[in-house]
Image 1 (cartoon, rainbow, N blue to C red):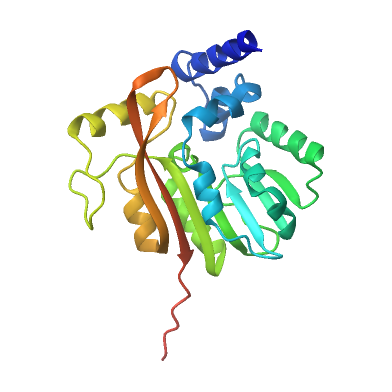
Image 2: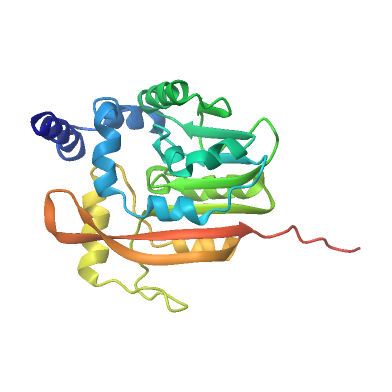
Length: 252
């Protein structure tokens, strides 16, 4: 019902804009941020987090493969895969928020996803039981990970040679970007990091250069998307899909 949806939106907006985020470590701060809005999380984020479907659809689903969704939250991203989900041997939803993972486990049970497991773990350290994986995804989670570069290094270490990595997230460009990348105005580079940082979402000008340097790019776009209840502004985001480069063998 419209009224109930409005109440859900107001609850999410309260946690986004007004409720203090507290905690002695990153996991506690995440739970402080998400616990009160977990039930309304998915519907609101559909209007805020652009490009997720495009990013997930850019990935070629590997038959009998292992997929790790870092910062996967409620597991709603997996619904984008549709019937292709059953072709995977294993999918791990990795997150540090118990409230979001509770919804993920409920979704897994309701959908009968026997090959999906929700795991409370740190993206900088998680390793699948299989030892390696074929796909790693970060859907608006890199900006929520303080040690994002460590999470990317970990993704690189668990990806099989030729494995796919994909990320979509908010960002700001470097002041002087290289290689034809988008250049943002001073106002964009100044406003959005401060606005997002109120919720411990840390925009970085270094995600894109890191991804291009560490992996082989297959698909990449830079865009701006709408923000709910802010009709005249657009926040910059990127979509990246790449491949893990094969290990270089050095001869003696």
